[in-house]
Image (cartoon, rainbow, N blue to C red; front, side):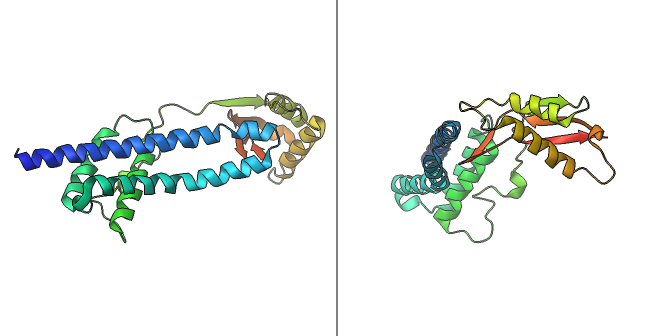
Length: 223
């Protein structure tokens, strides 16, 4: 390998590392904001929750644009060197192989590449296209769930379910909440079905938060 080729390879590796590091910092900051959601909810801090939502939305663009600016500064006249970016693309793909979420990391790379080059359409040599992405590739195990059996009363089933959901603040009216959920499930049963046809309810363990709302996500399993 000639000196110039070695220099280009080293430069590509350095750029790939910078992009991987930038995504790691973005992801860490995103998670830090997300971890505030349960605290905002329990404190009924809706304004804080709205501010967090706005911050999360702008976070991705901020990190993409910041990374582009740093790469432009570091690469100088070679910032739009397509041959170099092909090498960066390859070095990046190799570097992220063992990361927990390589598919989202590829999207981050493509956002940088497309904005830097002003790409219209697709440029598979310097970005990751749909055929390169498998959003389920990083899943190593089944999602943790809780299962609640129907012993003849939907109200008792949902009493068990909601009783397992731990908030720092108390329920305002747990009995009414149980009755409401049970009634909604009955109302959505297919025609001719009765509550005894509900075998169980399975829910994902983590609660999902959106400002003033907390979502328990699951499914009804029946005959």
